[in-house]
Picture (cartoon, rainbow, N blue to C red):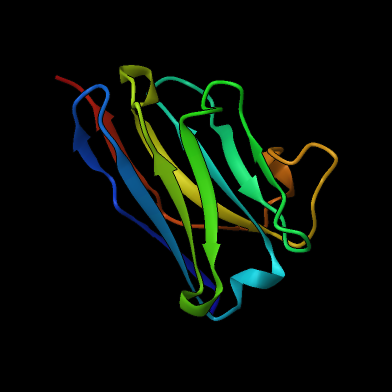
Length: 125
């Protein structure tokens, strides 16, 4: 059974950091494009970052460039999203997802085939 599980969310003050993890069971993450998405209350789900299968290329939404870093640990079958300098507008449920191939629009959520259940990130003082 293919399953993605996110963890690492929580409450953090503005300027703080969190590291989200996306772990897989039933398949090997190295074989997929892995993306992080988020959805704030009343807003559409948006792409945050993704990492490709071949050369490990990474992609980021403009809103998180320079603050977030995506990485892959093949031995642990896990993808991470390191989030620094967090802002209140980063508050959302964060989801990881897996796609078979890299779309010309890497953060196009409709190309992703498998999704986790999400983890809540709240940035507030």
